[in-house]
Amino acid sequence: MSQSPQVADGTEQPPACPRHPDRVSYVRCQRCDRPVCPECQVPSSVGVHCVDCARESAGRRRGARTLLGGTAVAEATVTQALIVACVVVYLAQRLVPSLTWNLAMVPALTGSQPWRVLTTAFLHGSFMHLAFNMWALWVCGTVLEPVLGRWRYCALYLLSALGGSTAVLWLAHPGADSWWTATVGASGAVFGLFAAMFVIQHRFGRDSSAILGLLAVNLVISFLGSGISWQGHLGGLVTGAVVAALYAWAPRQRRTGYGVWGSVAIGVLLVALCVLRVAIA
Picture 1: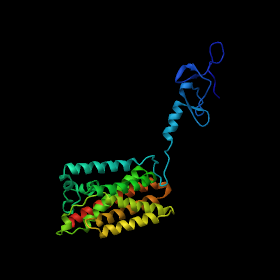
Picture 2: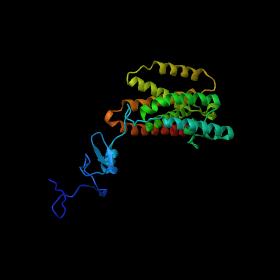
Picture 3: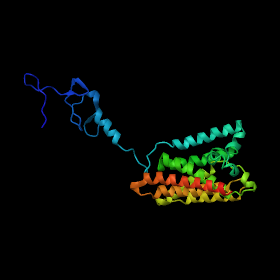
Picture 4: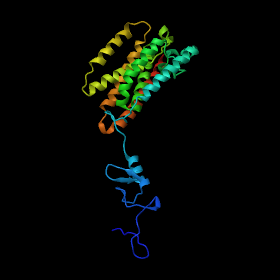
């Protein structure tokens, strides 16, 4: 049982706010029951909380979660950042033409310049090449990023890009022209996003016929069109499907662990495949 402080004549001392002792307050915090003056009151669903309890409650509160367990996001900021990066790099390519050769995916140079397996995803060969990839990135990204959350979406994009470069490396032949052919574009990563959309829609029983038709058309164009790296498209597609399946079918209570360590394992596997290919070439 608590006792109220008393003054010398035996009467009770008026309750005062702990943060402002000179202010009398008969309103109490619903959590800690301490007096709280108007300045320190934080409205809650029932009554008010003091500043300290409100801060503690906010620190414990988990953010809203997406369908796949990611932190909900209001805007596709990663998608926007990727588009801006690709546009800026394309402008730099126009100003410094040698940049394309220095950053493009060239199988023969992968062993000594390994950064090419990722930097190639930010290069483009023409304005139309850039425009189509950025349109596809925007369409897919604005759907996938809110569903996956930022870090899963970012991992999906980068792993798909790496998967595309890995396929280019393995399907090129030392001594042939393909071993020295430069490959550029975000297409491998974009195909990974296409595959992820199909996998996630299928996982939750939604109609995936539209994305399947789009995939089929783009794959036909990839194989029949000239100057198109079907190898990179195929590698990005397969990698994106594997990564998306990992996220979509991870156990509900262990989604973060599966997502983090699964993504790391896929990345390590792709790097190991690149190292092996360079070693045996």
